[in-house]
Amino acid sequence: MCGIVAATAARDVVPVLIAGLKALEYRGYDSAGISVLEDGRLARVRAVGKVRELESLYRAAPVAGATGIAHTRWATHGAPSTSNAHPHVSSERVAVVHNGIIENHAQLREELRAKGYRFESETDTEVIAHLVEDAIAGGASLLEAVIAATRRLHGAYAIAVMNRDTPERIVGARRGSPLVAGLGDGEFFLGSDVQALIKQTNRFKFLEEGDVAEISRDGCAIYDADGTPVERPERKSELSADAVERGEYRHYMLKEIFEQPRAIADTLEGRIADGRVLPNIFGVDADQLLQRVRHVQIVACGTSYHAGLVARYWLEGLVGLPCSVEVASEYRYRRAVVPEGTLFLAVSQSGETADTLAALRDGRNRGYLGSLAICNVPESSLVRESDLVLMTRAGPEIGVASTKAFTTQLAALALLAIELARINGMAADKYAKLVAELATLPRVVAEVLTLEPEIAKLAERFVPKHHALFLGRGVHYPVALEGALKLKEISYIHAEAYPAGELKHGPLALVDEDMPVITVAPNNQLLEKLKSNLEEVRARGGELFVFADTDAPVQQDGTRGAVLKVASGGNLIAPAVFTVPLQLLAYHVAVLRGTDVDQPRNLAKSVTVE
Ligand code: G6P
Image (cartoon, rainbow, N blue to C red; front, top):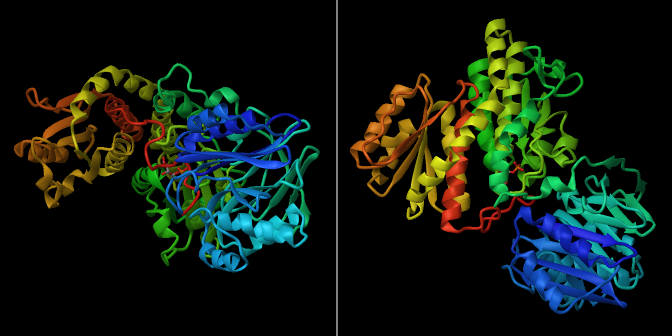
């Protein structure tokens, strides 16, 4: 999704802007641009494709300036093209970068056209440039002009704006999309997230909904939507610049897959001790709220939604609490009935996913008992706006395809399920067993990672395929969904997941010798039923690839397909464990097919628009 960087300093800020854009590459984008104030004029460089294309244009014809804004664009209105790339300018005076969607842009465009403004792009953003210019032409300062312009906008935005005539000043604003101010020494910055600026500073102020910030070399002043000065607390980020480096790994995704034992251990750290889940890990007084929970509504998107689906089996099966799970983009537009005592549980890696956030905000009027966020970014909007929070401690996840975020979400959700089980009177020995099993998850995941060479070999068989089917039963159906999502996201092989019992209600028609069928087969009470489903595939000539528990009696089918043994470590943690070989499979298939593993086509890491 679009990324913003802006800087004003006593030095040339182009290298700062380019470094910031590179740090934002993980969000997914298709064009990039920068604009700096150079000798009293707005210099602009824009390119379709990666930041490196922008960089080579810049090297061929360098620009320099002490104040500048920059952007990576993920196309929404208008194709990826140079003319649609940001920054957008008006009258060679105002330059704007924008993340979000302006819903009333068509109406504003007509109005501005009637006033004589000419549009050079198909974007919704260009209206902001003209609105700001129009107010400045009418005598407003940059700050006043941005406040006036944002009052006219419907939809979501984070913006950074500069004015050729007031150099050393940049005004940013946010509503619905994230924006943070970075505080340096005699230099100040704006960015979509901390990562964009962490090489420059570790001191930040997080803008709240409707805030407007003006940065200059003297400081950062923040105003609310009415223009009244407000104070936002300064925070020190713990993020280290190295945390976002790829190190010896070929791709971020592979690095993040291998970071899982540590990420899960960090997520459990200080939360389990003396054979129990420690009280109040969800926040002060969380216990009182959790005691009143009678129903859980999980809302999330993408991979986080799959984590929610796994949690439903735990909350219903272990705790006995009814639980509903829904993708946020559907949930927020449905008149869902909220049973009494419902906990709203949002699961999100980034904490900035537009639909998940909107669902949380709408939820305030729907009569929930309270909200709990399971999230990976401490400074995110979701964390700031939820009643209770349990952070996953995966560290920055850069690969668009989510891996360590998912398994740490499962660890966090397991903590919640175990805590709710205790509150709801689970027998002490059963409780102790679950806690002990969860504590082994980092070690068990480390073991399963040793299967990588075998999985890499297996991946060769998938390279020529066009389709793949993933099967699972019970709590492993969401694992199959996640495996199929990983494969389709990064290898572009069409992949579907089905609950194995549904096979004969449709997908069996697709099974022939060209269809690989990937199955997770833990040794649980559904194994025998699953094995019957596998026979149905075998009988139709389908090629089976089974990830089976070490003690599950699943036989290799001659030379066709493969059975790989996975030590699942127990029924509670098995979903997290079985996910890992599926991540590795998708990764190696994608590498062999030569796709852009970390930034798959058309996808974004942090989906900050609807
Ligand atoms: C995008 C990402 C996915 C992610 C989903 C939800 O689609 O590419 O990896 O699962 O958004 O994101 P969230 O940050 O809310 O977990």
